[in-house]
Structures are given as C-alpha cells and as structure tokens.
Image (cartoon, rainbow, N blue to C red):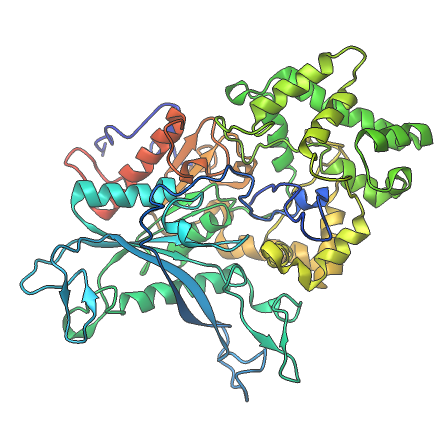
Length: 590
C-alpha cells in the first residue's frame, strides 16, 4: 500500500531514502599530540583517534545560560561476568565498579507548574492535578577521543545540529518535554576505572591487563544500565502506578563511533531505545580500510567543495615524485626531499624503511576531507583553499608538483621545528601509559580488539599518497608491540565484531536513521542509499551532498549550506514521526 509522503522535509540534494529505495572514524590532525613525545608525527593520521580540535572554536549559543549538570553513575566494570571473587579490588572481580560521567539538562522541560514533593525534590513532571505531559529523553552517546564537557548539551560538534536542534523544535512546536542527557564512554575523559597494583598503589588504567574491560559491548551495557536506572529515578521521571519506572521514549544520537553505538543501542536494546540517529557511522568494521584514502582522492577532485582534476593530479604527482626518489636510494635526491619537507634527522631518518613508509604513506600534507568546512576562516582549512593554493604553487616558474606539496606542508607545519618520522619512537609512545592523553591508547586498543579501520595506502588503490608505502602490517605491528595482540587475533576480532553486530546487514528492528555526507571518507563503511537496498524497513538513510564527517551535528550557523540545513530538517521530521508527534499528512514508514 502506498503511503503518504513526508511533505516539507525532503530535498533532492539532501536525499532521504525510505522503503522506496532500500539501502571514525576520523582522520585527525597530525598535530594532535604536539605536547607529547610523538609530536606532529604523521603516523597519528592513521590511528583513527576521534578529535575535534581541527574545527574552529565556536562559543556556545547559550554561553550565558549554563543549565547543564555534571553527574556520575556507578557502573559495573564487567557486565558479562558473574563469577565469585574474594575482593572488589581484584582486577578480575566482576563486582568491581567505576564512576561513569554524564551530563543532564532540563532546558526543554516545562517548569511553570513545578511543585516540590514531600522530600523537597523539585520535579518538572509533577503537580497536583496536573495532566501528564508527553515526555521524551534524548541521549547524546559519547565515544572515543578527549573529554566531554558541558558544551556537549549547549553547543558543540557532537549533537547540536541533530539532537539539540530537534529537542528545541519539539519543545517549542509540539509542547512536549525533552530531557537532555550525554553519557561519556568508559575509558575516556573522566570515566576511567581506578586500578591498584598488589601494593595498593594506583596504576594506569591503560595498561594492557586493565584495558580488557574496554569494548563497545561493555559500553552498550553501560548505556542500557544508564537508561534503565534513569527510568526508575524519580529525580528525573515520576514513578508510575505501583512504583514501576517511567514510560519514556528514549532516542539516541551520535556521530562517528558514537553513531555506531547509537545504532547498535537500538539494535541490541529495542525495549529501552525507541529510535536512534546514527551519523557518519562506519558500521562495517574492516581491517584494511583502503576506501578511506580512495575517498580522499575523490574529494580532491570534487568541484562542489572546491576540488579539481588539477588539484588531484598535482597531489598524486607530487607524492609519486617523492616515491621515485625514495625508491632510487639516491642520497642527493633523498637529501633534497628531507630539506624540502623539513624532516627531523634528514637523510639518515629517511634511510630507514619504516620511517620512509610512515613519511610518505600517511601523506606529505593533510587534506581536510573529514573535517572540511566550506566556510572556515583559517588558512588551508578546507579542500577549496588547499586545492587553490596547491594549483597556484605548481604554476610558479620552475616549480614541480613535489615543490608545490612542500610549500603546503611548510604552511601546515609552521609551528613545528621539523617533521618527526621516527617509527620506533612512535611505537614506544603508543606502548606507554603516556598515550592515555586524548584517549589515544584506549582507541587504539579498540581498533586492535574490535574494528581495525586501518587507513592504508595500498599499491592497487587510488590513494593520493605514496601508494604501497602504508600497508596494514604497520597497524598490525602497533597492535602486536603496543597491546600484545597478534595479527591473526586482530583479523579475528574484526570478523567477530561483524558477526556480532551485522555490519551493513543489521536485521530485526527499525527506527534506525543513518545520515552520511558524500565528502566524508568514513561513508565508505557506513549505511548509505546504495547499501541499504534490502531489509531496510524502518531503517532509512539520508545522503548529504557536500558534507563532511557528521557536519550537520555541529553548531547551527547562518553560513551552513542548504544541504546541511535540509539534513537537520529531515532528521527532525523523522524523529517527530517515530515519536508519534506527527502531522496528519505524515505517515510513519515502517
């Protein structure tokens, strides 16, 4: 039976695909850990750490209204073990707990009829004779990377353009209450468990033996416990008749790895989670992720974001020129390359095969595909500005593509005394507790034990860097040396994750919305229109042309492109439908 269209929320350039067409995470800045020993080491581009310092800092819209509370919830360290133990301090003891941080705001809960209960607690949902209001709970799912802070529920890159935008419109247009939550992921930010050695002294939570409790499955169990315990907490929701928990519809939101968790929370706990919005989520774990850099190459020629065939050709030609020099073993040529690109240690550093692989296989310059902001103000901050400068440099008299890349590299690395390409130093840092900074060691552990996601530059790919200079063996060495996980185990771990979650072939539930941008390299592993052509009932997709990694979840700005604005309206429209807050001309597509 044909269903009525969703009028007013569809756009040809921001395409939402329903049943009519069944269907990382992040490349980071090379300067992520500039304060640490690894410096601007380009191997960090491959590590997949989710970090948002590459975006322009923007003050919260509600900076003068800090209504966000910081709270903690006691969680079990191991949700899946029930074996007895002698001491809660024992690492293997299933009764050991940790404190998980979360954030809460009642900004979109009506307080005009607030009343104090007998214990003095204010409840926005209670009052003598008050009619029960429709109430929802929106949860911004935390993930990898640096600490969350109060801005997560004010205005940040995490959940502003989808969750907070939809919550505000629901509250204003439908006169409903929306409670706002954000849950930090275990082993990130301030949600690390505390461990002690045999003498009772605190030890690092990112030692190999302590990281065994870090996984997406444990994180999802944390989320389920958080939701169920919040439902029965009268401080947030009134108890129903007989003292049972509140009947509240929960919606989860997330981008990148949190987008994966958002989708999986609905998949694994449909009795708790009513719907999920999964943004830029690479739900198909893959060991050797050649598609990431293939998409980067495509972006460099994508006219909509300022790319061009000349830009891509110059980019690839410059890397190939450097590759030819390194393959030739010519001291004179290598010395020229080391000078052009300001390599720490010069010729001797580039003479080491592993150093050379990291230098060229990770890219001589950083193309901002994942973080592309068409309206950013910084120098070389987006694809258009990088491509424009690169093509201009190439046109200079007697300049080569390699020289043009060197000029861009110098501009990007202006704060660095030299470019450190020491592979052994990289391994040493990653293997140490110091790599807890920014969540680096935690995320690398998850890539080794669950996801892979290694952004390689293989010979037979269209990677725009030094093809053949970054194979998956480098990433597998990180797992082996840094975490004691051998290559065969990493491969099996990735397959186990696919088997457990289903990848592109998730089955069984609807109310999962997947939103992706065509500039984003992580869209290669996400649920996109062409991949969701079967078994897609209730699992639509939105394809946002010209958008990078969950750009629509960023703070709303007047300069946002029409496709990004349309994506936000599409998300809000479908959330409204799935919650039952629909107009008469909108039908829920199951």
